[in-house]
Amino acid sequence: MQLTRAADYAIRVMIHLAGLPHGTRASRGDLAIAAQCPDQFLSKVLQALTRAGLVTSHRGNTGGFELPEAHSHASVLEIVEAVEGPIHLNVCLGQGDSCERRSWCPAHNVWQQAQDAMATVLRSSTIDNLAQRAVPPLHSEQPQWN
Amino acid sequence: MQLTRAADYAIRVMIHLAGLPHGTRASRGDLAIAAQCPDQFLSKVLQALTRAGLVTSHRGNTGGFELPEAHSHASVLEIVEAVEGPIHLNVCLGQGDSCERRSWCPAHNVWQQAQDAMATVLRSSTIDNLAQRAVPPLHSEQPQWN
Image (tube, rainbow over all chains, first blue to last red; front, top):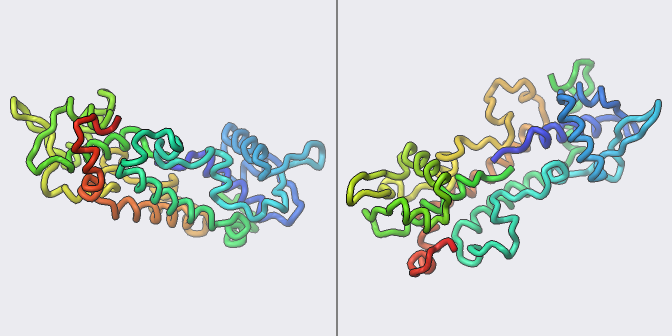
């Protein structure tokens, strides 16, 4: 029961982008350093974030990756789910009404409540707030995630 | 970010054992049916639960598996951790002081708070309470987890 590495890197990428002045584009190389993210993960992460619209990709000399204004308040939950898909703490929570044990299984509600408690925390944390809290190291001249 | 199948089966096994009259031993076959658990998972689950002392194993004609009285109030968290090891929602939470980003990383506290919220729910649910809520299906003559 652990966040995937890709989702962890996605949060780091988004914190870096949210910490840049609005409209600034970051190169793939900048993101790899800022998020301390290996190349094979970065491709997967940027694909997932772009597909979800949480990041926009621009080609050419002035290209790069940018956090759209509309998503500057994206929650940690949105970012995690963009990479991992919907969170289901136990497999039964993803089965909707098709779980045959649902009507009487005493564990179902426990998984649901635990998932809700976790999701509430992740939903209440927005990427712009996290970036503000990271201001000193993000604005230093050292790679931020070393 | 999902519970392993083994941990899910472990909870089912424990609910079944906790629903039996004190001192009753269940055979491996009974547990496989009650928890609707494939054999390769059942071996892993019973090994982990026995190693943690949450289940005792008895050999011979009157042998079987039993929930010791001392562990009748085991929490869902204890059972999950007996199978999966300590829960660390993100890898950084398992690194103790060795995570170099810990002192300033804005995401660290979010993962910690989300983990704490989830663990609080899982810690407050005890196996004897869950078994009591499962009384009607557990005491039916049908396999309980069908």
